[in-house]
Amino acid sequence: MISAEEAKRLAKKNLSAKRYQHTCNVKKLAVELAKRNGADEKKAALAALLHDIAKELPRTELLQIFTDNAIIADNIAQRAAPVWHGVAAAILAQTKYGIEDAEILSAIRCHTTGKAGMSTLDKIIYMADMASAERDYPEAELLRRHALENLDKATVEGLGMSIAWLKAENRPVDPETIEAYADLRKSIYGGRKIE
Ligand SMILES: [Fe+2]
Ligand SMILES: [Fe+2]
Picture 1 (tube, rainbow, N blue to C red):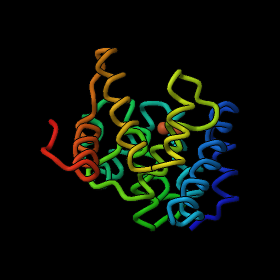
Picture 2: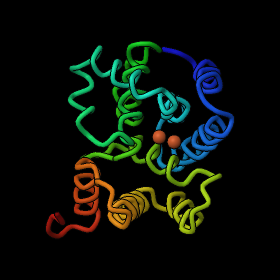
Picture 3: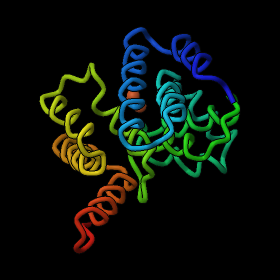
Picture 4: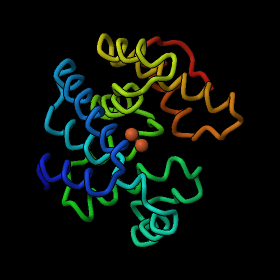
């Protein structure tokens, strides 16, 4: 498995300066969230540093990665293109960078969508990505504060916002996001499953 230093070098090499800065900010927030929620800080750092590693790859290259790793890719090419890069990053982390840790791979894979039954590390990377320091949409600062205060509730809030934004723009909501929201909402607030 590669070290955090190597992962950082890879991010710098593969990403634009802007996205590299985003990645460093995600890492910083992810480590802080790990500290506050009793999660493994090293895993959080590594997942954060690699989460967007495939974000700037051309579409053809992403599709090739999915074809070459069809079982792990699990028909991702049939889902909306914006969610591809997380799955591609997890595949690269596993096959190219020797990361075998299932928690790290899952957190990278679902960082754009969430999923049903999110682990603490999944939530950390999802929220660190959504509320990283350079994010400047109107709700970002409040969401960042909520993430630091209560990771579970902030993740429900973040998933809900993401669904609302996509719907407002008439863009498809990934089924995994709907499942993540319904599942986490139910586990925190109880009550019936919201479809
Ligand atoms: Fe991403
Ligand atoms: Fe990101």
